[in-house]
Length: 437
Image (cartoon, rainbow, N blue to C red; front, side, top):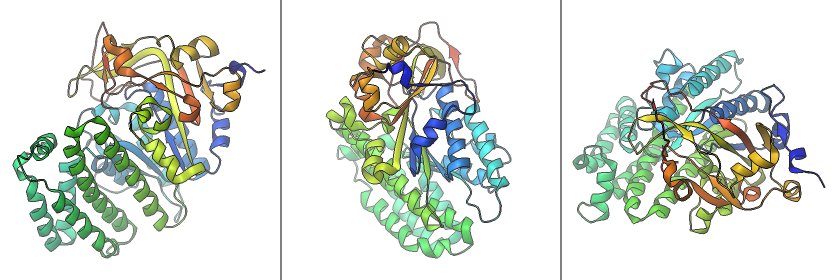
């Protein structure tokens, strides 16, 4: 019987590190690449390495990230040689909302530079690769994007949109205040208005897209997506006061809907659509294989498998110890925090003790189970907040790794991601919470 150590592929940093992964991906059209924290350099760096190979070797034409749509679309314009930004740093300047370090960091800047250079190297007619956002926190920014677009292309439609979005005027761009007031009957909700605006945009999408060729098709698609985001975010912020499961499920359904709309958009432009998804493990590992799924939560990884079947493949990351960029609480400054060693009974300590390689790739299927991979263990998830003193309660959950991911990359010791703006400060005693995954 083989040992698990004999089944893993050590990662050395060389060009052949992910050859076996490329073989396993095969003809998959949707590759979802996770992260066990939002602030670990190695997760971002290795994810970018894999994505470059998918774009160059397998013809992937989009990265869809756990990021706000308007901010990511600004970067999308840049990598396609459009827009006013003169550098990758400028193109990522829209990412101002906490936690800005998720996207305003050195790894993402380098990747955006690479993506622009890749697109510029293509011959005429070859499809460029774009960069898009999947998340729904940008409700008010997306409203502004809709209005700016319509002001330029259809002033009468812009007037109607302003009338509808005026419903939110009392809330000073505070989405949680809107959710609270409408959930408890203090104000009438704006559901009818945002649905009407999305329907209006969708009906006119074809006319808008025909104005100026490919670029116009991208801009009109983005405008419609912003209107869709406003509609879904309006429901999301009302759901926040009905409990975690309801709001979590709405958010991940929005991500899945956005992914599906992006695939359809790319296919309409000619050829098959292949998309790489970047998000936290908790969004991309199949929820049905976790205790969150047992409590009623679903996620993007589950929905992608249900929608695309064998054409979707998901990859997770894990680490045993190191440092991480995270905050003490929401909207607090980022810090460099030390990650405690994996807890007893976790996959993290199992990989550290039983495999022994500092970095490796594992396909956690039946052969790995036979070789000793535990089917169910604790698994760690660090979001944008990290408080180690409550780590077992706030950062660990039970998962069945063989059902959760198609591939797992373990890096035993990792280091903190470096934000472009160093508002971070080191702290002697790290602190935790996985909120904001």
